[in-house]
Amino acid sequence: MSEKKKVVLAYSGGLDTSVIIKWLILQHQYEVIAVYADIGQTGDAQAIREKAYATGASKIYIEDLRKDLVDEFCLPALWAHAVYEDRYYLSAAISRPLIARALVDVAEKEGAQAVAHGSTGKGNDQVRFDVSVMALNPRLEIVAPLRDWEFGSRQQEIEYAKQHNIPIDITKDKPYSIDYNLWGACIECGVLEDPWLEPPEDIYMLTRAVAATPDEPRYIELAFEQGRPLSLDGKKLSLLDMVQELNRLGGEYGVGRSDMVENRLVGIKSREVYEAPAPTILHLAHAELEKLVLDKETIHFKRHLSQKYTQLIYDGLWFSPLREALDAFFAQIQPVVTGVIRLKLHKGSCMVVGRKSDNSLYDFSLATYDEQDAFDHKVGESFCKIWGLPLKVLAERDKRK
Image (cartoon, rainbow, N blue to C red; front, side):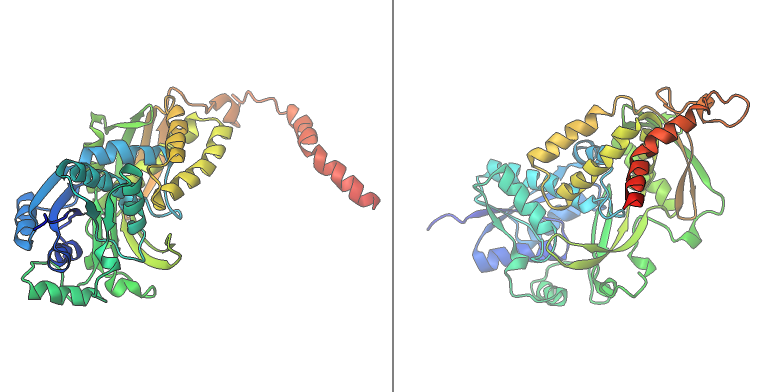
């Protein structure tokens, strides 16, 4: 009798991946090795381990990838100001290549022939997982049960789980799909599939409703050194601790919620609700500091590169030469991005109210309109004449016609 083929599954302990373990065993006779990537989501490691074994996994790896996530993925995305369609900070998108890397590492260690994930056939994550695995180890097979199996709805999965005594935390009354890590939460399904309906308050994990936030604003000071977040209110923190603390603070003041209809990679529109307290605060502060210390041409050109970088992450192309090349550009401009940004958190908003840096290009004597004004106003007329000369020549030609 030949040995069973081994498959390494990206396991969350949720509905889909719990059903997948049993389905792979019963339908395809796989030996299933589970990999649980701890990227900051809430979860009891021991409970996850027990659940995986109870569901049929032969082995489970619980990998603490929180530091990897913030240092290797979130920080470059922060430097790039990667925000998809102006609202989504790519929390799920940015974690998929990291999880895929962990799957490939375990597959190579265990001598597995395949890796598996719980992404659907019409979602973005299938692309991110598949393409990342292809880039890291093109010889591995990729199994995606949700693209192939017989279940036509989450309700049918719930019934299957009940039939096979698979413990789940989801019900027909609350069938939301929530993906959460340190960089934010993505919430979909259930009543959210109707874009007219307001999201119910019970879907939110990280942020308070505005009505439940403090009446008085909270001021914070974020210091950066060479582009890297360094301290909060004068206290030095690791990037991991910084993200966790800003999630707590931002969430307390209702900062970081968004409700959007976005354009998926596969060509359909989907309604998504996001929570991202820490990225919202960090992106705003970092971008404001760059405005203070970088020249105009660099800032304006960076916007074009940021859009492309964002698209690469969203489209599952993290492990691409272009992403690496763009990383080099963004890293090159960070040495001068040192300074302090003061922010005001209040009733769901985050606003920059102060900024300072030894590398500032803001010159008071040039910017002021009081008696200390050092700008030579007389040169303004000549500047306008030269700047407008092409349009003047064009207008004269048109008048002759």
